[in-house]
Image (cartoon, rainbow, N blue to C red; front, side, top):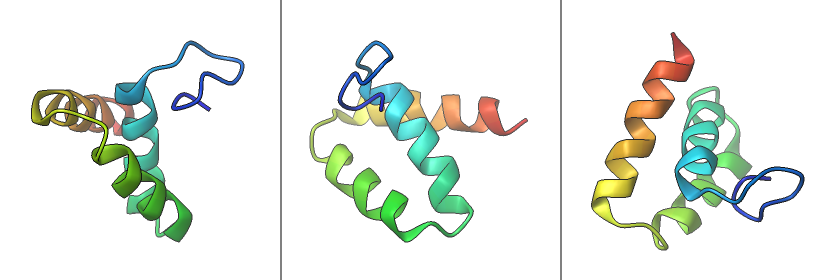
Amino acid sequence: MYDRGEGVPEGYVQAYAWLNLAAAQGHGDARDNRAELRELMTRARIAEAQKLSRELAD
């Protein structure tokens, strides 16, 4: 939803963070979608998303 702005503000960082959490739980679609999103992001934004993902997991 975050990657397309469906019902929430569009935000690749948020989308990546949530996809990262889902992928860690074994969701294959999340892994695929995360890989596609990674192609649209800078390294700095990916690092930000990974940090957010760790914060959300706590």
